[in-house]
Image 1: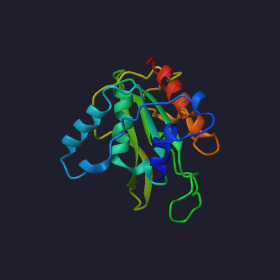
Image 2: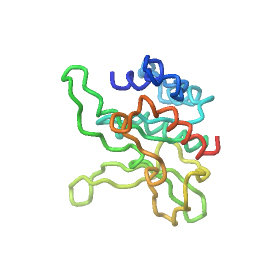
Image 3: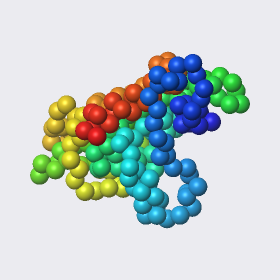
Length: 197
């Protein structure tokens, strides 16, 4: 329901609506969950065809979702704008109160430079350590292994074998605290412009 509030925010009647920058929603719903991984990847690629930016709506567990990570990766691969918008500040439909903000998924995806100079995607994963405990560790992104171009919004090139999280250079917003219903169109425009769109 929180995602729906944001997706429909520019349609809501508001006294400032005439001054608000709107956007076209190209998001996909999870109705295709039961298809193969390759079919789902193709659906995501197709859904992003005409998008200029990818807006990641951040809830409590968004950072751990494989297909959210894939959409983030595709935004880098296709050189689209990227931004994160926290939605947990909106009241929960049943409890009628907000929740703490979830971890930014862009902190769990990054880019590093390989020894041969290519830029590759990485993801932070929770894996067992040799001592039997689980730790967060950067690994090469498993759903796309080819080289990518460094996004225009990266202010500096990553050092060899040092992962730079996307969150280091991508804007992050709080939908409630930063009056998202008025600002989200401008945030999306800014992300697209920073990516050269």
